Amino acid sequence: MHFDQRTQRALREVGLDADDLQRASELVVEETAETAAELEAFFQAADTLYSDMELAHSASDYPEHSVEYLDLTTHADDMRGWLRFDSWGAYVEDGRVLEDDLVELTLGPTIHDRVQFAPDRERLR
Image (tube, rainbow, N blue to C red; front, side, top):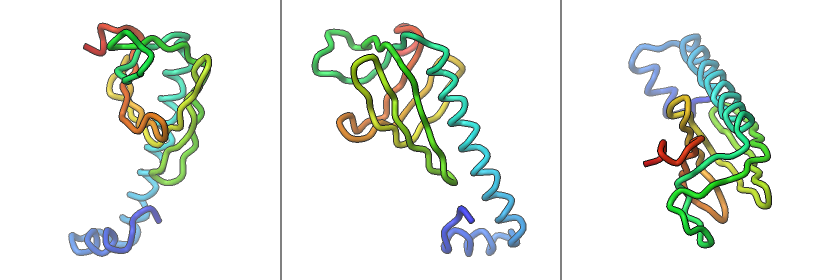
C-alpha cells in the first residue's frame, strides 16, 4: 500500500476502511503513471523547448534546449528518470503538467531545482 502507517491510521480515524485505503492507493499509482506518460509525450512532441533553468553558460533568461527524450519510471507516487538534451542530460526526480503547454520537472544533481519547460519563451514570462 502506498500510505505509510501514520497516514493509514489518520485516514482510518476520519472514517476510511481498508478497502477505501487500498482504492486511494491505487488511484495515486494510476495518477502518477498518467502524469509520467503526459510528461514524456510533451517532451517527445517538441524538438526545441525553453526553460527557466539557470545555466551558467546561457546569456538568456529562458535558454533554448534541443530535446532528445524524457524517460521516466514510476513506483507508487515516485517518479524518476532522465531528461536528455542534445549534448547533456539531467536526472529527473519528479514532475507535473501545469497546463497543456507548460510542464515542471524537479531536476536532481547538478541542477537541484524545479524547472519549467514550454514550447516558447513567452509562455515562461
